Length: 414
Image 1: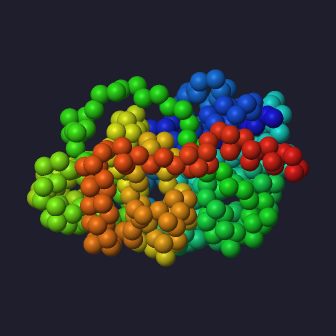
Image 2: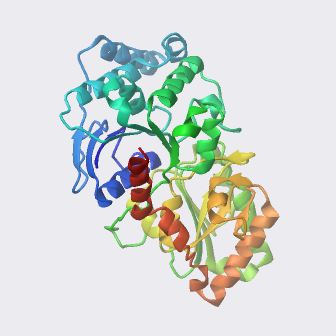
Image 3: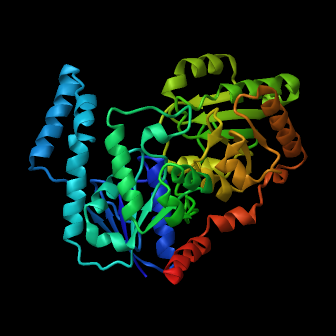
């Protein structure tokens, strides 16, 4: 089978979404499919053994100059016209120029795919908008929906209403109608989006974020990491809606209840956390057992740590439901270390780990978090190997073999 992948970015350092997309692309190739990638990274990036074509940006068009004028007004004069323009046109001038650039790139293509897979990141869905304008590709089109869209269809507390919400609803309704298949990283997200666009329930399949082979280049540990300790790691963006305060309070309560653990335990929080900066600084000043680094980390360094800590933490928001499959979930499964899941009762992480998985708590249940950390610590004290996850079922679910089966089933059922 020939698969054309149209994707925003294949730079794994720019976002968790790009990491997930690259892992999926690599596994499609490893599964034996012939894969051609058209990407809008605006860099000449290649993936080993896969033909990748960097789409060039259109730089001589009215839309391009209007987008740059808008940027100058915003940066130099602090005039933000985006809400007004997007209320009128639905999207930014940059978005329109980007999607036109992708369409122009696709029109030059001679490849004849059996499947057209659109992958995006963040809230843009530019490849989907571009392929929507290429009706000749619709009969083989699989639209991969990585997150809810538009933003007012997010569950609380993420939801917010954009000035262009109506146009974005219309855009995604067309995606749901024109794409032959739709794919989602989680079962809960498929059901969630299907409640707004019922056709997704007819066309949708679940293709989870993938475990792809990745060789760690730098085997050295950073200076702040002591492998001999009981290390708990949260790696990733602490967004506004993902407060780590319950986790920190739970960890401090664990130390209070187990003073002997102070000298051999450490909580590591690595990643952007601008919305919680002041609170995190206060905790770090008074808690040497907590290491906080607010910034971007190379994937290589983080993945190496995930494989060598005692416990990996997946922290989600306080909500009624979390239909997302965190992009780090496959990395945590591959690390084969116990996962401390801090998530709503109805969450994809909890669904996959299972209702009988012991190390789950609501994100703000400080007492329960402290108790779970204590249980994990006592197991670690007996033998660090007690904290191996050993979930072959989830390894299989995130594997090349499962991905190949999903794609082949679509072809066989066609």
